[in-house]
Image (cartoon, rainbow over all chains, first blue to last red; front, side, top):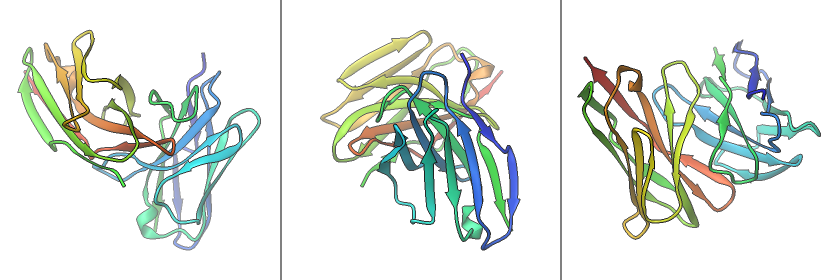
Length: 113
Length: 109
């Protein structure tokens, strides 16, 4: 059974740029959620995708957007990067929407300068 | 919206018992989860309570009181490898999992 994978591991971007982060869900899981985790804080829910549709969103502006593909992998896109976007971005998959048992990937560390 | 409160840090010695409390405010509550995260690692699922009472999983137990909007995670027979951050998370309407700020547990020999 393959776990959740994310790419890239680390990324450095300049303010105003755009970034795309990728996630492959655990085999058999059809739901992917994205979280932002600032240093020393808990993960903050960005949004969730179920069967290629966004079906839940946290308090993040529209410049945070996503996609889910037929194989249930997912992308997180962030436009017009701001310094405060520097964080660890975590992807988590589960076997059903709203699932409480989520399997997290190792994350992508984004630094905005 | 949702909010959760948990202590920021707890220190204990090997073999001891630690209880991490979590109080929450939310609408459309479904259940309370607990996750462990080691430094530099990903959160890993520990337990889930949807109904009042105690759930036991090996050395870890989790408790929920829906009427008090309160839960706790009990770590027994502490080991050095239990040094990590522990997060409570509320599962609520809107397919949203809201995490608390985390409790850093430091286990000393």
